[in-house]
Image 1 (cartoon, rainbow, N blue to C red):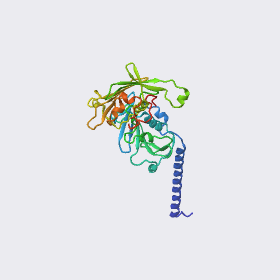
Image 2: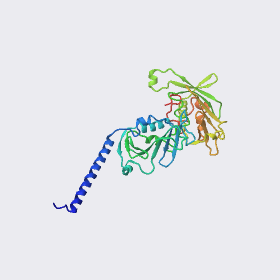
Image 3: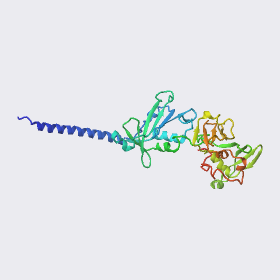
Image 4: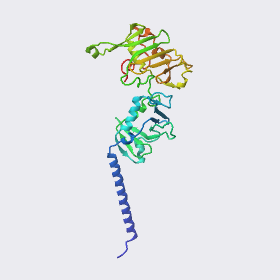
Length: 362
C-alpha cells in the first residue's frame, strides 16, 4: 500500500481543524443563547438580601464620585454639606438595580460599546456599614450603567464583569433628575421626607423681618359631599394673636404650598451657621406637624453677595437663597389677609408648585 502524499495529510489536518473550530463556535453560541434566554437578576436576590446596606456612591459621567450614607434617621450626601437625599429618587435607584429583571444580551467584550459601555458611564456602588472606616469603602457590589432603551429599561453590568444585562427597570431617571445639582439630592429646604408619611402641618408660627409675629392655625371645616367634590378645601387657616383669630385670604393656601417647596440652589457648610447669623435671625418660621417634632426655618441677614442664608434646624442644612425670599418665607400678617395679592404665585420661583403644605406631605 502506497503512503499518502503529504498534501493529502495536510488537507485532512485542515478539515479536522475546521471541524473542531466549528464545534467550539457552536458550543459558545449555544451557551450564549442559553444565557440570553434565562430571565434573572443582575444582582441575585439572595445576595442583596444578605446585605446591610448603609451607604451608596455614584460615579458620574464627568468623573465625580458622590457619597451618601444613612445617619440613622435619614440619608445624607456626605460629599455636599450633609444635604438631605431625595428619598423618592434614592428608593427608585436602589429598587431599579436590585429589583430589575432581565436577560444577558452579550458576554463579548468587543460588543460592549454597542450597549453604551464606552468612555465614562454612570457607576453605582452599594456600601456596607464600614464605608467610612474601611480603606476599601466596604463595597458590597458595583454596577455600571450602559444606555437606556426606548420606552423603559436598558443595559447594565457588574463592574469588571463580562455579562451585559438588559433589564426592565429604569435606574437612569433618578440619577438625571437634578440638572444643576449632584444626583439624588432633595431640592427643597424642607425635605419631602418631613414630617413623615401622612404628616400634616397644623400650626405655623411666623416671625417676619418687618411686622409683629403671628401664628397660622389650621382649622377643620364641615363640608358637604358636593362641596368636597367641587374641590373646596376641608380646612381653613386663621391668623391667631392671643385669643383672637382672624380670617385669611385664599393666598394663604399658596403660602402653605410654597413652604413645602422652598427651592435651593447653593448649600453651605453648616459649621458656618453662627458666622452667617443663624443664632440671630432676621426672620423665622416654625412649623408644627400633627405628629413629630417641629421644624424651624431661620433667615439671616444678607451676606456680601446679597443672598440670604436660610437654615432648617430640623436637618441642620444651610442654604443661600435670593434676597426676595425673606418675605415669601416669613410674610407679615397683612400679606395673608383677605384682599391682598398673592406673591407666591405671582413670582416666587416655585411657589405655585403643588405641595401638601397644610395638607398631607406626599
